[in-house]
Length: 296
Ligand SMILES: NC(=O)c1ccc[n+]([C@@H]2O[C@H](COP(=O)([O-])OP(=O)(O)OC[C@H]3O[C@@H](n4cnc5c(N)ncnc54)[C@H](OP(=O)(O)O)[C@@H]3O)[C@@H](O)[C@H]2O)c1
Image: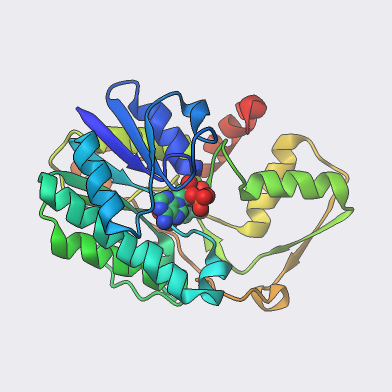
């Protein structure tokens, strides 16, 4: 089976590539040009998902059996400031990926987000809860979900949250950098979610991929915390004692895009179908910290 990953040089794309290539032939599609994708040592076609001609031509040439669509405009505050780009990439780009996949009669795994929910619930969100995004990023990703559901019969929509991995920037790396530069760290304590390690998510996608258990899935590491609590655990695991940690509110941080107050996802359908789940976020973070040596 040949799997095409869009956004293959992104944080999740790289880990997915490394996990899936253990079993499948993997090819990639990304807006970044060779040689910046050469470290993957596999065929990556340069292309823009917002260009239907490029998507159809590339898919036609690569003839995948399945697409994992991770490419997205993921800068949440950037989306708020530039809604045209957000909808163009996340909604219309996804429509293009679906149309090209429809031509080849292949299924798509679309990576979506906890930000499709408004955060007003007091218990973890199930796949059967009604999305209601409060940011442009969330709205544009939900619009992508709608294209997937409308245009395809065989699809997986995988909603995940608070990703960190070994490639590119992420919250863990930012905190470790800041802790080495500043005495005091001020971190939001009124947003709660589930930090998720990209390698754990990739392994679960690999399990789901060969099945015909199509539908919407929430896949995150288990348990939840605020960004403040997440930071406390990162500093503890890194053995950093000097930095003073100060909890602040979202209002104090004053970012352009609103974030859900509570966006914990329950891996409900995963439990009902594959009958298993994920490990907890602290255990995953511990492994990530141990494996950090090869980070780029
Ligand atoms: N990060 C999180 O916490 C999180 C949480 C929940 C869900 N997700 C979802 O998970 C997926 C992967 O996230 P990530 O954090 O790995 O994202 P990422 O690191 O930003 O990777 C996205 C990749 O897509 C590429 N891309 C952007 N626009 C494109 C276009 N028009 N055509 C082709 N490629 C394009 C990016 O290239 P450039 O870097 O050059 O733009 C990048 O290589 C996304 O769909 C995201 O919405 C992420």
